[in-house]
Length: 110
Figure 1 (cartoon, rainbow, N blue to C red):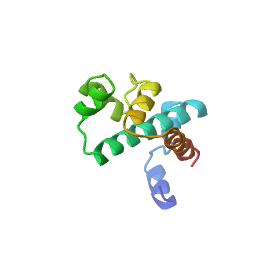
Figure 2: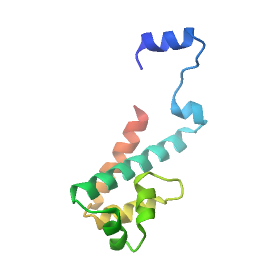
Figure 3: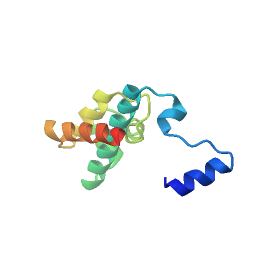
């Protein structure tokens, strides 16, 4: 958000802060969330690039379509290992997964 907009909002009585501040997350929790979001975005992107349905991905990882939808939405009930397993099933390499995680960490640091 640019400085002028922030000043206008504060002058109108609004409090301006980060998502981390709003949710009361520790730096570690915020990084974890960013990593999970990066993995979920990558999963959806890879699935769409292959022109696969969520059902096709679900069959590949022995899961359900609704679970894949939750994975792509970074639902709190989805574990990181399931996200990684799905990415690997879609052809991601160990290095690809490491890059995705690194991107998630850098997004949080920004």
